[in-house]
Amino acid sequence: MKLDILAFGAHPDDVELGSGATIAKEISLGKKVGIVDLTRGELGTRGSAAIRDIEAKNAANILGVSVRENLGFADGFFVNDRKHQLEIIKMIRKYQPEIVLCNAIDDRHIDHSKGSKLVSDACFLSGLLKIETTVEGKLQEKWRPKYVYHYIQWKNIEPDFVVDVTGFMEIKEKSVLAYSSQFFDPTSNEPETPITSKNFTESINYRAKDLGRLIGVDFAEGFTSERYVAVENLSKLI
Image (cartoon, rainbow, N blue to C red; front, side, top):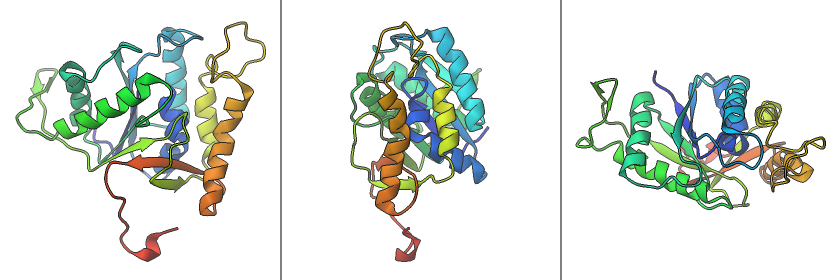
């Protein structure tokens, strides 16, 4: 299956939090989108890997993505090496996306910046003919995505561009809250974490609203780019 967009996240819920509304909008425009999680989030303070598997499936259904896979890398301990790069290359060649979305280039959780560089490096390597990969005994063709964009996560990184996601925040919020074990729950007896506060849950909306304010729309999501962001002409700017 060829996809238009393939979104990678170090953990289940990264993609939803960073780019859920953008993905929902692209799907509404007829684009085929997939998600690949690097780990099962097994080191998360709340819940478990098994619970996260169910939550990720529910979130994917809410967004309407075409496919979701998990590479089963070690949460907290995966590294940017040949072994891990090859597994990501297999995903890129399998789905041949034009656009790849991945973790923030710098963030509070160490897996986010690690995952960001790992996926970015794999996107380049995936286009090299002499790197051979096989899936189910079949040799894959080389493929390099045209664009690699990084969504913004915990830190307020200055975006290189923003996407108007007005009308798609409700879907994003539902997909995020599908991870009910992770976020604000006044009845929970589990330990508190930086993302279990009510403020964090509310930030999903007010951060998007603030980015929207800056470009004159209701809501927006921000991204950074590894190359200059070009426009066809001046009238194409919002």
